[in-house]
Image (cartoon, rainbow, N blue to C red; front, side, top):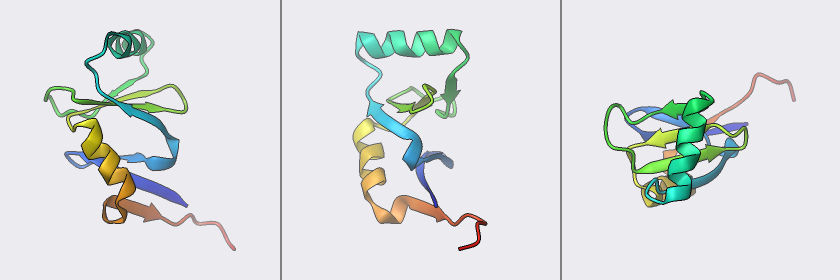
Amino acid sequence: MARFVNIGFGNIVNADKIVAVVSPDAAPVKRLIQTAKEEKRVIDATQGRRTKGVLVTEDSFIVLSALQPDTIGRRFQSDKNIIEEKGDMDE
């Protein structure tokens, strides 16, 4: 069963695939974003706003969000922000 979390402006991510949520201000994170852009592994979900949160997936994709990391973290912990989707698998 997939769990999705809203990361702002109607964009959602699979909560089970996220490894880390970090701030984009540190130099290592900036290098990580730049490298991912060069390798076409960045998903920009900021809707043209300033990047305040960076989500790292287990597949090494980088998702940029306009929400703060602590806001995204609270949404991961809160049941009301999680959208659960049941698979079509027979039980």
